[in-house]
View: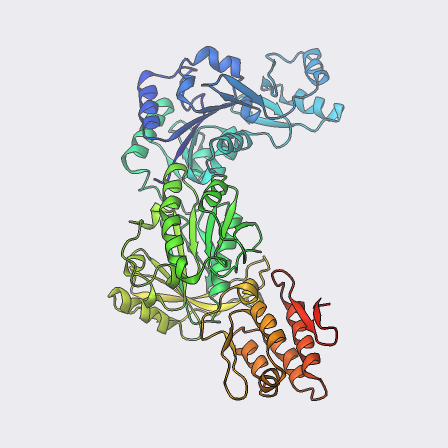
Amino acid sequence: MRYHVLACDYDETLATGGRVDDATVHALERLSRSGRRLVMVTGRRLDDLLGVFGHVDLFDLVVAENGGVLYDPRQREHWRLAEKPPAEFTARLRSHGVDPLAAGEVIVATRRPHDRTVLDSIRELGLELQVIYNKGAVMVLPPGVNKASGLAAALHRLERSPHSAVAVGDAENDHAMLHTCECAVAVANALESVKKTSDLALERPNGRGVAELADRILADDLADVSVTRHDLHFGTAGSTPSAIAPYGTAVAVAGPSGSGKSTAATALLERLGESGYQYCVIDPEGDYADFEGVTAFGDATRAPSIDEVLAALRDPDTNVAVTMLAVPLRDRPAFFAGLLPRLVGLHAELGHPAWLVVDEAHHLMPVELAQLPLRVPADIGGLMLVTVHPETLSPLALELVNTVVAVGDRPEDTLGAFASATGRPPPRLAAAPAAPEEQRESIVSDTAVWRVDRAEAHRVRLAPGEAHRTRHRRKYAAGTLSPDKSFYFVGPQERLRLRARNLHAFVELAEGVDDDTWTHHLRRHDYSRWLHDSVRDDELAESVRQVEQDADLTPADSRRAIARLVDEHYTLPAEPTSYDPDRGRETRTP
């Protein structure tokens, strides 16, 4: 289910001449029984609304006074969402003969042509107030208070996101509310300006239009309404923006190690964050713990709790990284298998998280995977799987993928591997038109994008993200590198086989090995080679190489120098110690 909330204006949308007919009430009752939440958003004062509408308790919440007041019909409680204009303002309007004039808890309202007197009074008194029009009505409110701000407060209370909401209205003061919701709807009697900016214009007016909308939501969740204004633009094909739909999309980001998968994945994450879509990253190696705007659960010493992850995700403004560094490799698929169905259940209940991002997906959803609690990508909103080789993913996961983002020098190889794994013919790879001159400096890399229902893939120039993320620092500092990426202290006669699974372990083992073993690897430049080839940190590798080439250093001096370089480049967990043989005790690395 994509749409979990209906936000509805009252006058000339839900109501005709201030009254709501029985057929409209029954349609709202049916929609409420489907599990969706109803929010009324009106410019009326609360006492006025309660006097004319006897079915307010159909709604989970009511936003009154054009965003100034929030009311809970079931608890019969209300909250003022802003301060009202000063009494001298209302008194001044009365002294100038403004009539009608009504003052609510926040709003001051009149009608045209008194708007000129209103504006003059605001200026003469030096007040910071805004004027909002609703056809003939003139509403005065504090700055920033409108139907969108009031609806945001209601949705926050309901633990819902505007991206899972449909809003319907008819007039100027509905624009902000309509724009902030995922799907904007105009009744047939709406102003042309409202229809023009809406995603759907109904065939019927007023309450009959709302009943029509309720029936369409119940029938197919507005599946036939194309909403493209929220598409995620992450690059260009020549001068044409390349975008993916934020709902019902399953993306596989694939390519060899070091090819730019992280750049592509984080660019898409940033687009999600900028657009307000909540996401949850499954982060086996700790790569996203410092990503801007993310709350991380788990670290190198503590495994995440599924309950705390789910509790955080109930707030649609909180993006989460599930850091699995402290979960043993063999246990990670089982942990993920326990988390995934609960994420699907949370999405079914609340409509968020909007996206699930699975890094190192081939480890968590391997070929052998027998069950997957996802029937279609929409079960979790949107899905991103980041992997080295798509053919190493479970066929159940591959069946979900409808878009492949292939990175690296030979994206056609990655696309071919995906096609082979899914029984499709490989796509033709079209050449991208040359980028405009003004775009070339901002381009990070070339990427191929394939919608798998099409015969052709296109080269896309991926735009950089703005947020800084230190690539794989936690993974290399405190994670668990695969056996072929680990460093092994073996010594000159290969009598040892001490595996350093990360930089923290490397520094600790280096302190304990004998001088012959340490010097054997030092003179062979094994340390810098490992840092270059496996850790892929050229800057650190070059600095270590200079230590390796300094023949005047004692084994103890070179140990300290390399440990210090590692500590300067990476934040190790518990501050690594270095052993001072002259003192015979452990000391903190300076």
